[in-house]
Amino acid sequence: MDQNDAYRRALDVLREGGVVALPTDTVYGLVAVATDDAAVQHVLDIKRRPAGESLPLFVASLEQAELIAALTPPARVLAARFWPGALTIVLRRRPEFRTLAAAGDTVGVRVPADPVLRELAAQLGPLTGTSANRSGHPEARTAAEVRAQLGDDADLVVDAPLPASGVPSTVVDCTDERTVRVLREGAVRRADIALVLAGVAEVA
Image (cartoon, rainbow, N blue to C red; front, top):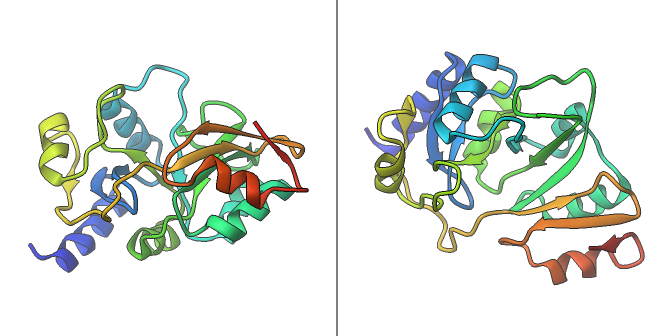
């Protein structure tokens, strides 16, 4: 199966309610349609995530993000600078958007740099964007590493190269308009976030 065939198969599997492990713009991710409860539960089971933990979501665009979350001014500034890219922004979830991926009233969203992922999200809606590994284990950077950790748990594993860095996304909490909290520093540096937000919000 060549890469184009693999991505076409991924679209079919996702549309049918399956879970796909595929390379993202950071590390290998476990992708499912976020509004499909059974598919999201399958992702949670594969991850062996503790109860009450949320999964980040991939969205196709800022406009799609606005349909599921309330963007604060600092979130808009960061999105304008770092999306598409490796920055996950935690926001208040809109009440009308329901997903098992959001354990509470917040949701982490990201527009990935990978155009295939953006196209999948454009066609299918927001997708889970969590790393393809068991909780507490190292992120996978090859299809072989995914299979070593997850076996045959995913419905499809797309074998394709990652970007050279393979560094997970940075995660920031932008629910407060005045203070942005860096929850995990990854591909986007804290110093760069602080520089972009100078005069807009404090960075903690």
